[in-house]
Image 1: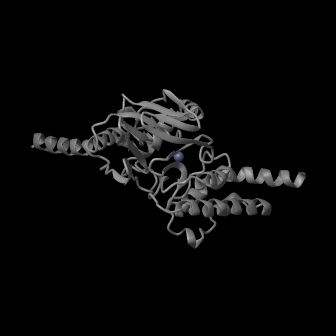
Image 2: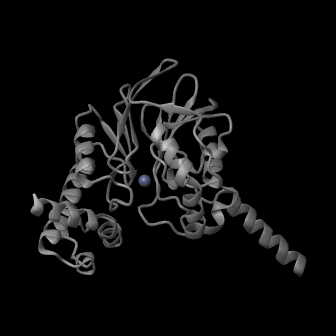
Image 3: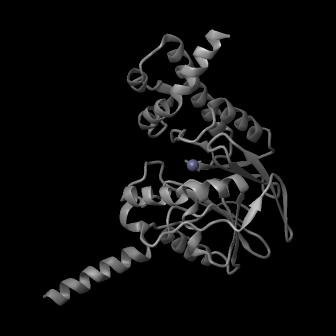
Length: 308
Ligand SMILES: [Zn+2]
Protein backbone atom coordinates (compact mmCIF):
# COMPACT_ATOMS: atom_id res chain seq x y z
CA UNK A 1 0.00 0.00 0.00
CA UNK A 2 2.78 2.32 0.99
CA UNK A 3 4.61 1.50 -2.23
CA UNK A 4 1.51 2.22 -4.31
CA UNK A 5 1.06 5.55 -2.52
CA UNK A 6 4.69 6.43 -3.18
CA UNK A 7 4.47 5.61 -6.88
CA UNK A 8 1.32 7.68 -7.26
CA UNK A 9 2.94 10.50 -5.36
CA UNK A 10 6.11 10.30 -7.47
CA UNK A 11 4.14 10.09 -10.72
CA UNK A 12 2.25 13.24 -9.69
CA UNK A 13 5.47 14.94 -8.80
CA UNK A 14 7.15 13.97 -12.09
CA UNK A 15 4.20 15.15 -14.15
CA UNK A 16 4.12 18.53 -12.45
CA UNK A 17 7.89 18.77 -12.59
CA UNK A 18 7.82 18.23 -16.35
CA UNK A 19 5.11 20.68 -17.27
CA UNK A 20 4.64 22.98 -14.36
CA UNK A 21 3.93 26.12 -16.32
CA UNK A 22 2.12 24.75 -19.39
CA UNK A 23 3.93 27.21 -21.66
CA UNK A 24 2.28 27.72 -25.04
CA UNK A 25 4.21 29.96 -27.46
CA UNK A 26 1.89 32.11 -29.56
CA UNK A 27 3.13 33.43 -32.90
CA UNK A 28 2.58 37.20 -33.14
CA UNK A 29 4.62 38.08 -36.26
CA UNK A 30 6.95 36.50 -38.77
CA UNK A 31 9.49 34.38 -36.80
CA UNK A 32 8.28 35.90 -33.53
CA UNK A 33 6.59 34.14 -30.61
CA UNK A 34 5.35 35.22 -27.21
CA UNK A 35 4.66 33.33 -24.00
CA UNK A 36 2.06 35.37 -22.20
CA UNK A 37 2.03 35.18 -18.41
CA UNK A 38 -0.76 35.95 -15.97
CA UNK A 39 -1.53 39.54 -14.93
CA UNK A 40 -1.75 38.46 -11.28
CA UNK A 41 0.80 38.88 -8.56
CA UNK A 42 3.44 36.24 -7.80
CA UNK A 43 1.92 33.14 -6.23
CA UNK A 44 2.53 29.47 -5.63
CA UNK A 45 -0.13 28.71 -8.23
CA UNK A 46 1.48 30.66 -11.09
CA UNK A 47 5.04 29.89 -10.04
CA UNK A 48 6.08 33.45 -10.86
CA UNK A 49 4.77 33.26 -14.42
CA UNK A 50 3.29 36.76 -14.47
CA UNK A 51 5.52 37.93 -17.29
CA UNK A 52 5.70 37.99 -21.09
CA UNK A 53 8.72 36.29 -22.61
CA UNK A 54 9.33 36.45 -26.37
CA UNK A 55 11.67 34.98 -28.93
CA UNK A 56 12.74 35.60 -32.51
CA UNK A 57 13.95 32.81 -34.77
CA UNK A 58 16.56 34.13 -37.21
CA UNK A 59 18.38 32.18 -39.95
CA UNK A 60 21.03 31.15 -37.48
CA UNK A 61 19.71 31.22 -33.94
CA UNK A 62 16.94 31.97 -31.49
CA UNK A 63 17.07 35.32 -29.72
CA UNK A 64 15.20 35.33 -26.43
CA UNK A 65 13.89 38.57 -25.00
CA UNK A 66 13.95 37.89 -21.25
CA UNK A 67 14.15 34.39 -19.81
CA UNK A 68 11.40 34.05 -17.19
CA UNK A 69 11.00 33.72 -13.43
CA UNK A 70 12.79 30.43 -12.61
CA UNK A 71 15.15 27.71 -13.77
CA UNK A 72 12.12 25.41 -14.18
CA UNK A 73 10.42 28.01 -16.40
CA UNK A 74 13.61 28.28 -18.48
CA UNK A 75 13.78 24.51 -18.95
CA UNK A 76 10.15 24.38 -20.02
CA UNK A 77 10.73 27.32 -22.34
CA UNK A 78 13.70 25.51 -23.94
CA UNK A 79 11.44 22.50 -24.60
CA UNK A 80 8.69 24.70 -26.07
CA UNK A 81 11.18 26.45 -28.38
CA UNK A 82 12.64 23.11 -29.53
CA UNK A 83 9.17 22.11 -30.78
CA UNK A 84 9.16 25.17 -33.06
CA UNK A 85 12.75 25.26 -34.33
CA UNK A 86 15.93 23.22 -34.17
CA UNK A 87 18.04 26.40 -34.09
CA UNK A 88 19.92 26.95 -30.83
CA UNK A 89 19.07 29.73 -28.39
CA UNK A 90 22.12 31.86 -29.12
CA UNK A 91 21.35 34.99 -27.15
CA UNK A 92 19.21 36.31 -24.38
CA UNK A 93 18.54 40.04 -24.27
CA UNK A 94 17.48 40.99 -20.75
CA UNK A 95 15.20 44.03 -20.65
CA UNK A 96 15.91 44.78 -16.96
CA UNK A 97 17.05 43.22 -13.71
CA UNK A 98 13.72 42.20 -12.18
CA UNK A 99 13.64 38.51 -11.19
CA UNK A 100 10.58 37.46 -13.20
CA UNK A 101 12.42 38.54 -16.35
CA UNK A 102 15.88 37.07 -15.84
CA UNK A 103 15.85 33.96 -13.64
CA UNK A 104 15.24 31.49 -16.49
CA UNK A 105 18.65 32.15 -18.10
CA UNK A 106 20.23 29.21 -16.26
CA UNK A 107 18.41 26.82 -18.61
CA UNK A 108 20.39 28.14 -21.62
CA UNK A 109 24.04 27.46 -20.85
CA UNK A 110 25.04 27.88 -24.51
CA UNK A 111 23.52 31.34 -24.91
CA UNK A 112 25.21 34.69 -24.58
CA UNK A 113 23.38 36.73 -21.99
CA UNK A 114 23.26 40.41 -22.85
CA UNK A 115 22.04 43.43 -20.90
CA UNK A 116 22.70 47.13 -20.42
CA UNK A 117 25.75 47.79 -18.21
CA UNK A 118 23.49 49.42 -15.60
CA UNK A 119 21.22 46.36 -15.60
CA UNK A 120 24.23 44.08 -15.04
CA UNK A 121 25.24 46.28 -12.11
CA UNK A 122 21.73 46.12 -10.62
CA UNK A 123 21.76 42.32 -11.04
CA UNK A 124 25.08 42.23 -9.23
CA UNK A 125 23.79 44.41 -6.39
CA UNK A 126 20.24 43.14 -6.00
CA UNK A 127 19.88 39.90 -7.99
CA UNK A 128 20.42 37.41 -5.15
CA UNK A 129 18.11 39.26 -2.75
CA UNK A 130 15.44 39.40 -5.47
CA UNK A 131 15.80 35.68 -6.17
CA UNK A 132 15.43 34.95 -2.43
CA UNK A 133 12.31 37.06 -2.32
CA UNK A 134 10.92 35.04 -5.24
CA UNK A 135 11.54 31.84 -3.26
CA UNK A 136 9.42 33.30 -0.47
CA UNK A 137 6.58 34.34 -2.76
CA UNK A 138 6.54 31.48 -5.25
CA UNK A 139 7.95 28.53 -3.32
CA UNK A 140 8.70 25.16 -4.80
CA UNK A 141 8.96 26.01 -8.47
CA UNK A 142 11.98 28.20 -7.74
CA UNK A 143 13.99 25.17 -6.66
CA UNK A 144 17.58 25.24 -7.96
CA UNK A 145 17.21 28.72 -9.46
CA UNK A 146 20.25 30.97 -9.42
CA UNK A 147 21.08 34.36 -10.91
CA UNK A 148 23.21 34.06 -14.06
CA UNK A 149 25.08 37.27 -14.79
CA UNK A 150 25.24 38.78 -18.30
CA UNK A 151 28.43 38.12 -20.28
CA UNK A 152 27.74 40.79 -22.91
CA UNK A 153 26.96 44.47 -22.38
CA UNK A 154 24.55 46.28 -24.67
CA UNK A 155 24.33 49.90 -25.73
CA UNK A 156 21.58 51.85 -27.41
CA UNK A 157 21.69 51.70 -31.22
CA UNK A 158 21.58 49.09 -33.93
CA UNK A 159 22.50 45.56 -32.92
CA UNK A 160 23.83 43.92 -36.09
CA UNK A 161 23.58 40.14 -36.02
CA UNK A 162 24.08 37.62 -38.84
CA UNK A 163 21.38 38.64 -41.32
CA UNK A 164 19.36 40.29 -38.60
CA UNK A 165 19.16 43.76 -37.08
CA UNK A 166 17.54 44.96 -33.91
CA UNK A 167 17.19 48.52 -32.69
CA UNK A 168 18.02 48.84 -29.00
CA UNK A 169 16.75 51.68 -26.86
CA UNK A 170 18.18 52.53 -23.47
CA UNK A 171 15.43 54.05 -21.36
CA UNK A 172 14.91 54.58 -17.61
CA UNK A 173 11.27 54.84 -16.63
CA UNK A 174 10.66 51.49 -14.91
CA UNK A 175 13.99 50.70 -13.20
CA UNK A 176 16.46 53.42 -14.30
CA UNK A 177 17.96 50.86 -16.73
CA UNK A 178 15.39 49.58 -19.19
CA UNK A 179 16.09 48.05 -22.55
CA UNK A 180 13.41 48.21 -25.23
CA UNK A 181 13.96 46.23 -28.42
CA UNK A 182 12.45 47.17 -31.75
CA UNK A 183 12.56 44.72 -34.65
CA UNK A 184 12.52 46.72 -37.92
CA UNK A 185 12.00 43.50 -39.94
CA UNK A 186 8.62 42.77 -38.37
CA UNK A 187 7.63 46.01 -36.62
CA UNK A 188 7.46 44.23 -33.25
CA UNK A 189 8.25 46.36 -30.22
CA UNK A 190 9.45 44.38 -27.21
CA UNK A 191 8.70 47.04 -24.62
CA UNK A 192 9.75 45.19 -21.48
CA UNK A 193 8.24 46.65 -18.31
CA UNK A 194 8.14 50.16 -19.75
CA UNK A 195 4.68 49.03 -20.84
CA UNK A 196 2.21 47.29 -18.56
CA UNK A 197 -1.19 46.62 -20.12
CA UNK A 198 -4.34 45.69 -18.15
CA UNK A 199 -2.04 45.23 -15.16
CA UNK A 200 -1.16 48.07 -12.78
CA UNK A 201 2.39 49.39 -13.05
CA UNK A 202 4.99 48.44 -10.48
CA UNK A 203 6.77 51.65 -9.48
CA UNK A 204 9.23 50.32 -6.89
CA UNK A 205 12.32 51.30 -8.91
CA UNK A 206 11.17 54.13 -11.15
CA UNK A 207 13.31 57.30 -11.06
CA UNK A 208 10.07 59.28 -11.56
CA UNK A 209 6.72 59.10 -13.28
CA UNK A 210 7.75 62.05 -15.48
CA UNK A 211 10.74 60.04 -16.78
CA UNK A 212 8.47 57.09 -17.46
CA UNK A 213 6.00 59.26 -19.38
CA UNK A 214 8.86 60.58 -21.55
CA UNK A 215 9.86 56.99 -22.35
CA UNK A 216 6.30 56.19 -23.43
CA UNK A 217 6.54 58.99 -26.01
CA UNK A 218 9.91 57.64 -27.23
CA UNK A 219 8.30 54.23 -27.76
CA UNK A 220 5.19 55.74 -29.35
CA UNK A 221 7.38 57.45 -31.99
CA UNK A 222 8.77 54.12 -33.29
CA UNK A 223 7.15 52.62 -36.41
CA UNK A 224 5.80 49.64 -34.46
CA UNK A 225 3.02 47.35 -35.63
CA UNK A 226 2.83 45.05 -32.61
CA UNK A 227 3.53 45.91 -28.97
CA UNK A 228 4.60 43.20 -26.57
CA UNK A 229 4.23 44.64 -23.06
CA UNK A 230 6.27 43.23 -20.17
CA UNK A 231 2.97 42.31 -18.53
CA UNK A 232 -0.46 41.96 -20.12
CA UNK A 233 -1.83 41.12 -23.55
CA UNK A 234 -0.03 41.73 -26.85
CA UNK A 235 -1.57 44.58 -28.86
CA UNK A 236 -1.68 45.75 -32.48
CA UNK A 237 -2.96 49.22 -31.62
CA UNK A 238 -1.83 51.95 -29.27
CA UNK A 239 -4.20 51.01 -26.44
CA UNK A 240 -1.33 49.95 -24.14
CA UNK A 241 0.46 53.28 -24.68
CA UNK A 242 -2.76 55.24 -24.14
CA UNK A 243 -3.41 53.33 -20.96
CA UNK A 244 0.14 54.01 -19.71
CA UNK A 245 -0.24 57.75 -20.40
CA UNK A 246 -3.64 57.87 -18.72
CA UNK A 247 -2.73 55.75 -15.69
CA UNK A 248 0.69 57.28 -15.01
CA UNK A 249 -0.81 60.75 -15.54
CA UNK A 250 -3.51 59.95 -12.97
CA UNK A 251 -0.95 58.70 -10.43
CA UNK A 252 1.20 61.80 -10.96
CA UNK A 253 -1.77 64.13 -10.52
CA UNK A 254 -3.02 62.26 -7.45
CA UNK A 255 0.36 62.49 -5.69
CA UNK A 256 0.98 66.12 -6.72
CA UNK A 257 -2.41 67.25 -5.42
CA UNK A 258 -2.07 65.21 -2.22
CA UNK A 259 1.36 66.72 -1.50
CA UNK A 260 -0.01 70.25 -2.00
CA UNK A 261 -2.81 69.48 0.48
CA UNK A 262 -0.47 67.81 2.93
CA UNK A 263 -2.50 64.58 2.82
CA UNK A 264 -1.66 61.59 4.94
CA UNK A 265 -0.20 58.54 3.14
CA UNK A 266 -2.82 56.19 4.56
CA UNK A 267 -5.58 58.33 3.08
CA UNK A 268 -4.01 58.51 -0.36
CA UNK A 269 -3.62 54.73 -0.41
CA UNK A 270 -7.38 54.40 -0.02
CA UNK A 271 -8.19 56.68 -2.98
CA UNK A 272 -10.92 55.04 -5.08
CA UNK A 273 -9.60 53.86 -8.44
CA UNK A 274 -11.33 55.74 -11.30
CA UNK A 275 -13.90 53.62 -13.16
CA UNK A 276 -12.01 53.89 -16.45
CA UNK A 277 -9.25 51.73 -14.91
CA UNK A 278 -11.66 48.98 -13.84
CA UNK A 279 -10.16 46.50 -16.34
CA UNK A 280 -6.63 46.94 -15.00
CA UNK A 281 -5.61 44.19 -12.60
CA UNK A 282 -4.05 44.91 -9.16
CA UNK A 283 -4.63 48.70 -9.15
CA UNK A 284 -5.44 48.84 -5.41
CA UNK A 285 -2.48 46.66 -4.47
CA UNK A 286 -0.04 48.67 -6.57
CA UNK A 287 -1.43 52.03 -5.42
CA UNK A 288 -0.44 51.21 -1.83
CA UNK A 289 3.08 50.37 -3.01
CA UNK A 290 3.30 53.45 -5.25
CA UNK A 291 2.29 55.81 -2.43
CA UNK A 292 4.94 54.20 -0.21
CA UNK A 293 7.64 54.47 -2.85
CA UNK A 294 6.90 57.82 -4.43
CA UNK A 295 4.95 60.06 -2.08
CA UNK A 296 7.97 61.26 -0.05
CA UNK A 297 9.56 62.60 -3.28
CA UNK A 298 6.33 64.46 -4.16
CA UNK A 299 6.21 66.00 -0.67
CA UNK A 300 9.84 67.04 -0.96
CA UNK A 301 9.27 68.58 -4.40
CA UNK A 302 6.26 70.53 -3.07
CA UNK A 303 8.22 71.99 -0.14
CA UNK A 304 11.16 72.82 -2.38
CA UNK A 305 8.86 74.62 -4.76
CA UNK A 306 7.43 76.66 -1.87
CA UNK A 307 10.86 77.68 -0.62
CA UNK A 308 12.03 78.93 -4.04
ZN1 LIG B 1 9.96 44.82 -13.93
